[in-house]
Image 1 (tube, rainbow, N blue to C red):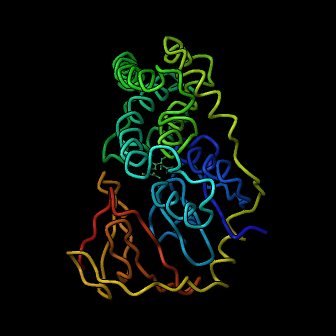
Image 2 (cartoon, rainbow, N blue to C red; image 1 turned 135 degrees about the horizontal axis):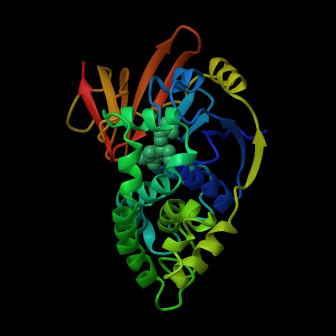
Length: 303
Ligand SMILES: N[C@@H](CCC(=O)N[C@@H](CS)C(=O)NCC(=O)O)C(=O)O
């Protein structure tokens, strides 16, 4: 059985990015369904408090955020590479554009269109994540503005594909495609939201090609089995390194996301490089767990 365990839920776009990474690399993986809203007790027992979706578990190591999951999978199975077309820098720069700029109007549009179908608990959870009170009426009212912003970004996607290439950076898909794909994945599937994508035929055809990549070889597991795996394993060895500027390795820190989601993870700083941050946590139930984050988008605070 594969030792890759993805914690995710079906409707999550960022989880779709990770699932499609598995398909891209032809990997087998175990699927653990996590709740869409807080609380997520089994998940946060592993992550130390990080609540976002998805995270990848390998034994007693937990990799948060799809940016880092991409690095882990690229090291795990280099061929085919996420960077074969266009190189790593361009793929990751486009990933940042998609994850941070294309994503938000896409979500705003989607949530506005389906606001009345979503449970109030969902609206409350997402508003609380931003430190706000839920306002469903405002979410619905914002649909035209979100659509306008989304289409301003879709113009860029259509332009990237305008010379007839199949993928954003050329003949083969890469991380840039995966990142842009997850933002428009649900919009392109649902009848009510397809209107956003219809003026962009090359983007629509590219979306169909991306959907064909699939999710690799998925087998279902559950959160209790994942906790057992973590409890039985010891974290992978960490190569010795110098810490980047900031708190020293071995010191107690908090690691959190820069977008103010209020769940920083406490632990001993064990990795602090230009691409990765990790903390070691000593837990009563699971023993030692190392929780990893990408450098981009995360802060470290000395305790
Ligand atoms: N930068 C993160 C973003 C992840 C993210 O924002 N995921 C959304 C779901 S698509 C989320 O966590 N929503 C709240 C939740 O699932 O609890 C990544 O690349 O993994």
